[in-house]
Length: 393
Image: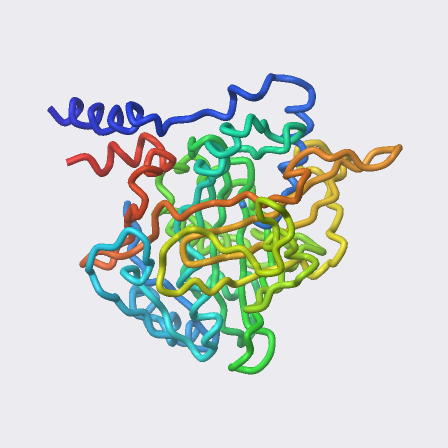
């Protein structure tokens, strides 16, 4: 009976025409190989776990863990609360929210979590017969942003000092299939000046191969990624506390967040049907707070990274972000650096960002254990078959 129910639930979305594969536009070719090589260097946007969402000062966290190493649920100096439990399909306010001494970091942290997908954009591209890359369309991508508890082990490993920090694991995958991760990153966010500052910086890291392998094996269960990371880091520090680095910072890839946008670097905000707008465009989501947070790479001209998949190959990357409550726009481009110049390999030639819509958010149940709550039922299929299986009644 349960098997039949799961099949019926999945079939419901298929019959509604929700399932869509961008593979109908692409062919297996050397270009695809080169794209995969380039994507390995893309930066900005890569047991059940019981832990609170955290924005924590390292001083308080270290002191707590020295006293209570087995009880991580209430370690927050920045308070974590359960908001209203009333159902909502568009507003993230029903999730957990955190407060700390910096208001902007608090707001960004509460928004910068959950699942986002650009399938709606793909349908729009299809209607205009725009294929990815050369066709001026987009690949179908999904982003999962998982909150990570800033434990004493992580704070020590990353040497954050006395900063209030926010930690995330970011996974990007193709075609609504969680196992097709093409980028996996660790993000460290923190304030850079006084408490009232509206500026936050974000550092990007790659993960130790063993950590990444374990996370990929649990690609359909991001709610356990925090547990995987915490366990691995703690064990490694006990075995070889100074010899092995579990995080490798991506040099030249730091990102600056702000409440203000750049008229030049965020020029896509002014792109409308006639490309003559003088007012920034906004996503269509109906929410009370339609304020956008924006980010740019601190390296104005982008940066060049060596491909992890093919040492010796280099990719010039450039990114900008605009982030609303339920919309995540990522203007991500990559160019392979060759002997005779640079060749465009991913992104949008017209400067139109990947426009991802919120699919789900992370919140806690009564036992303070993480779970996903879907806010867009028509896009729930992009969370993968395992999500349907684990949530079938």
